[in-house]
Image 1 (tube, one colour):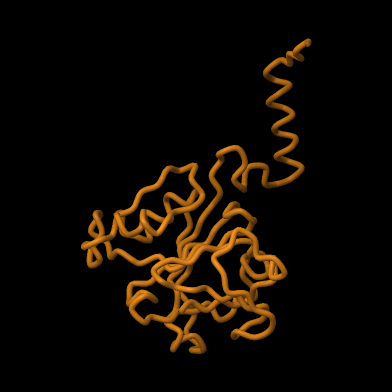
Image 2 (spheres, rainbow, N blue to C red):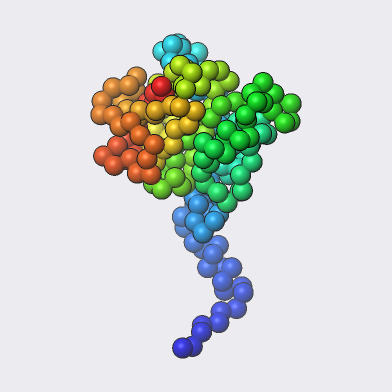
Length: 197
């Protein structure tokens, strides 16, 4: 078998060409490359129809940065990892709910939404600084229209005793799917609102 040897400038040029053509050559997790992740404060379900706009998301280069931020620095995962377990979250936050290791408020992660199946691609981490679902909390994302995650969620995880229900339309209407799932099935790329309880 004969190996093809290309000069380094040719390899780099081809990589630049691919990046220029796609505009996002390394935007999703491929071969261990991290994908961007943003942290969003989930709204209490009772406030889901209020006109007050939610706080803007805080974005990071990878899920590791988002998880560390959402938990106040109490939970750390490797930058190439694209998911976190409930045990990891519990181990890092047990007995330290009020303040994180960096002095900031520590939150409870209730869900992570992914733009690709198999818990991959760009992600959105939903966190609360209040009662988790396991203790009776209910939270929502009532309307994703106009957001990059509208009609683009392909997998999801729920945490803190929550069940995430994905709805096709705003304000929890249309087809729905309740799941922590690596594939959204018939709801793939069709979520416009989410309810955690």
